[in-house]
Image 1 (spheres, rainbow, N blue to C red):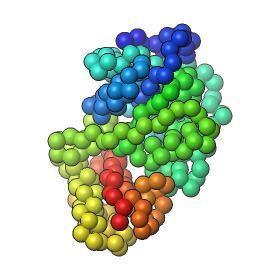
Image 2 (cartoon, rainbow, N blue to C red):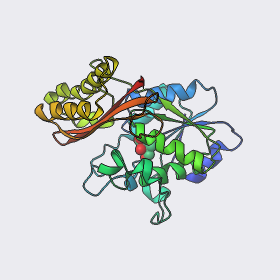
Image 3 (cartoon, protein in one colour):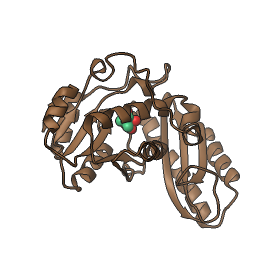
Image 4 (cartoon, rainbow, N blue to C red):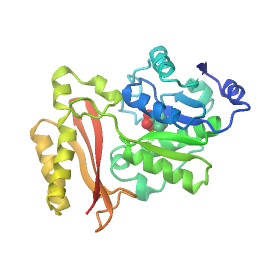
Length: 277
Ligand code: PAF
């Protein structure tokens, strides 16, 4: 596995290769990221992963500075799952001057849920993803469905700009108790870690209620918000939406339940796909 830090080295390393599959990450890798790389490997061609903590997608009060930088360990893990090339640029390489040209995703998709609570987040994500795509020029890219809205926003960006890249959504990897794996789980203390599973449990509770015939979406959302609050969480949202565009539920449309909530100082997100009702 080769590790490169500049766009020039990356282009040189990729010269003559076609059809690579790309896994963009911010590092601090866990089993969930490795599952994305394994899925990328299954496609047969070379696999390129990037490691770059993207300042543009963090608000000033968020955890950009304290986001763990664990390059050596990340590279070992990537080597272990057969990644072929790691692109790990520093900020001066990817943003040699202020990145004033940015991608503004459609507010109809990008200003709700995560975008509502993290204004500018998806502009930051789309801008870096487009730039990374332009550096790596992959044939396909794998995104975790744990960041469900991110996956949809990137998929739509690729459609709107007619980029010749297949966007693959990978299922969420969960710990034994059901907690969705996330780099931010590392911020949780032992008591918080034991409590963190409640987020996934609330989503499963919603899915079970819908399977049993519940259709009052607002009551289901409010009930889950209340339970989380009572358990000491500060929920931003619990929302039942259509899978395709995160619009309000409609008869026959497959649904997804999404949630974001803070537990102590850590903000966690999760979601669960629910079949059509
Ligand atoms: O999901 C992430 O880790 C990031 O948002 C991404 C896609 C690597 C862009 O910085």
